[in-house]
Amino acid sequence: MQNPENVQNSASVIASAISGQTGHTPRPRVGVVCGTGLGGLADALDAPDAPNAPVALDAPVALPYARIPGFPQSTVASHEGRFLFGRIGGVDVVLQQGRCHLYEGYPPEDVCMGVRVMAALGIETLVITNAAGALNPRWDAGDLMLITDHVNFTGRSPLTGPNHDAWGPRFPDMSAPYDAALGRIAMEEAARLGVRLERGVYAGVPGPQMETPAETRMYRQLGADAVGMSTVLEVIAARHMGLRVLGISCLTNKNLPDCMREAPLEEVIRVAGEAGGRLTRLVAAVVARV
Ligand code: HPA
Image (cartoon, rainbow, N blue to C red; front, top):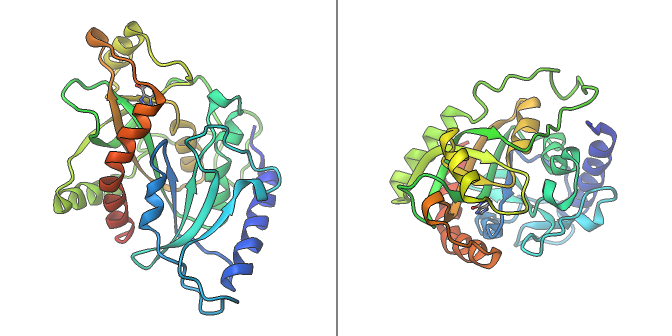
């Protein structure tokens, strides 16, 4: 179900809390969602430009989800649970450190609440990141993948139920979910920075159990290069509202049917943390060109 009243309430609470600290209504142009272990993306953020702030700011302004009535709390220990407002290369940015997943028991509208709220605050571009298992056998743990397309294997949609026409159409187009021009900028900046960036299709699954060998083989045969438990519903909501989307996966483990290995959460977080510096530099370079 779509939940415009909750989204509007959350956006109002956020706008007044942030303007209390910065002296002006937040007007972010870009929203960034941090995947598991990728909260270090916040390192790319400078303090907001806030000449009228009651107290001079030298760091991004944070607002924990717990201070936003009705906003779903992430129950995953590796997810911080707060919005950060700041700037990257002179561009006003809001960053979502921590997200909700279907496997936590949240319905699709709660999973997408962060993206809906960031859109209500004015973002035009969404940069969405995640930790994922590599299905493409040529890739290694620690590689980054530009998401060129996705398959929604969750069986759910944030658009089920009556449509909120002010957000977008009943049957939104999904022929180009990931923005090609942003993807080209990401490839250019990756080359300039010397960061290896693969390109591929992300399979979004409900989780929380990892894949069996037979499932891994199936997702690969059905056209996916990486598999993870987030992103696809948020991208559907973002496209519903006409946002431009850049998606990047951090491949934290190899997920190959003929040599399956366990990929415990600690390893996912460790590898994401190691790759995080490269992802942060790449995202900062792309956002500065948005
Ligand atoms: N499968 C599903 N989700 C994941 C994986 C995986 O192999 N790695 C990180 N998130």
